[in-house]
Image 1 (cartoon, one colour):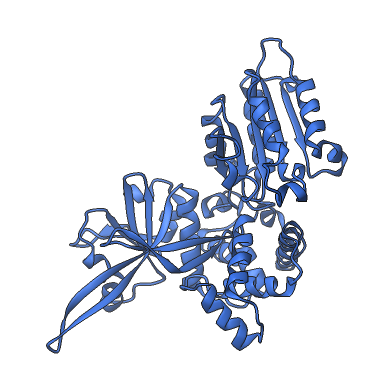
Image 2: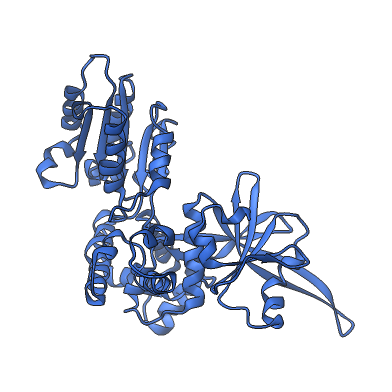
Length: 428
């Protein structure tokens, strides 16, 4: 069954002919190639574009190894473009293969960027590229592409996308999704054993090897251990110093906080993890450290821990975070100060809001609650909301089937299934 991925396809269609390089980024094996070379290419065909107008090249294919040289690549692409009144579409897959290690670690920008910028000078060319390393692409979009890069970040299947291809009800789907995640090939696998081996091998043989090779790392065991530590702490505040203490006390390692910070950045550059910073809601400012780290895919996270630490509360938080990011929101962990008197003494404490989701002038405050069995639990989950004076929508997501409703304070209570399966759910 074909998963349509309408959100990302729409992102590409909206950016057609905008005079910029469309950079499709995301973790490897999340479906970037299928999006660009199948779904988007089908759209071009449906729009009347002929095959001769589509120039596609997969640079991770050894048969195309010669085109990893930027000069050779430029000559080939330009030879395929004719001045015949037609528009040509250049689709390049995994373009980081056209950047050498010397260029990566040098002071000058890689020649690849010059090749891509040069194509934009041909007025009848529209350029689309994919890549799996944000250090080479995402963070360079506005600088090396001189303001002519436009990023579309693709993630593994959301829960709604996963359910398009899952043969079962939402409860069975949820159980599968929180265990094996949304990497596209998972849906085609029949047994748990297949899924486990695929995810474990993908992490070890693809992601970690890529990171080690690209960054010329020698202490690979420490990187491996760090991934496991981060996988164990999703939903918890941490920082390199805390992790350093864990390495010293538990693993008897002398790895420094600076090295840990560098390794975390490598994992982020490979799109494996993302950070959520703390945001002081009343003070309207970000707080530096500690932060929360979330995995782009829960199946990959669980694979690192041998599918042992399956805490539903933290997994649900990770899924909500990924959904908000997929919808385009900037996501922070909110903190709000509460002051009062108790037994005649002043007190000051900080309450947490699981997520502050912002997009332009729009903001939502969200709490993730696995269950709300009684009034005491409801009061606990909504305590931080009571300290927020603004009028942005406040939402509690619950892992139960329930009809969306509001309490007397205007707080919206909603099933996490409704939130995930309805793209407009935040506007209820």
